[in-house]
Image (cartoon, rainbow, N blue to C red):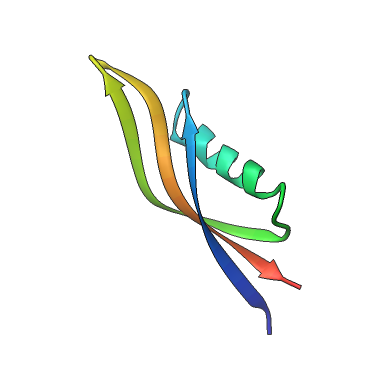
Length: 66
């Protein structure tokens, strides 16, 4: 039996949601080991005029605790 913990993270990017998701995992991996899943709960963007200025996502990261 494995024990899995879940943390909630918020990540941003100037380029897109894909990059924001990558940043979420990369930043979380600095303090959390054995990351197994990323579940994106919501995606939003900051818009100025007709341009997206920042992509944001709320996600849950699950990891196995040893």
